[in-house]
Image 1 (cartoon, helix red, strand yellow):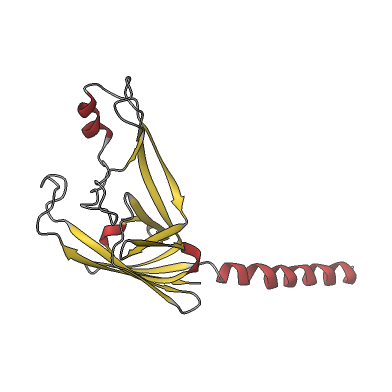
Image 2: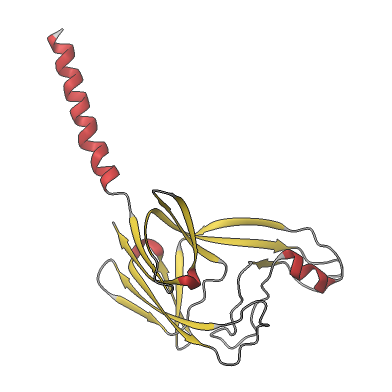
Length: 199
């Protein structure tokens, strides 16, 4: 009987030894927005929300991934901006109602541009990410889509202490997601001034 009790005590102790550190190591993120809000999120992730619109008959356009947030006013390569919008907004451009599919996927890489050269950084290797924004005086976007438009730059500090600076970044229809005591929070990336990961 004593042997069974001893085995039980040892088993509980071992469970506590291995499980508690794992729970204690759960990643959190401290987030600060341009509006001055501060969040501490557990289980943070970067999520891309998209709408896929198939090419209409005749092949006038290829399939696109579209998100319901403002498009970039420019791309670092100087090419034309991608078409963004909701399915309801885009369908009339093709003269008929299109079948659409919406979804989301987790983003594991953040791409920063510097002098039109891209650097792809795994999200897991980022210790902190700070955004900088500059108002665009002549925005090509209509006011009902984006009354005020910004060009974004960013600096990433990596877990090894190195820094990657980008003079241009656009994460498209991406939200930063995490849990708070009050429930889940989804923050559009354009609203975020800084993120600090706590591992």
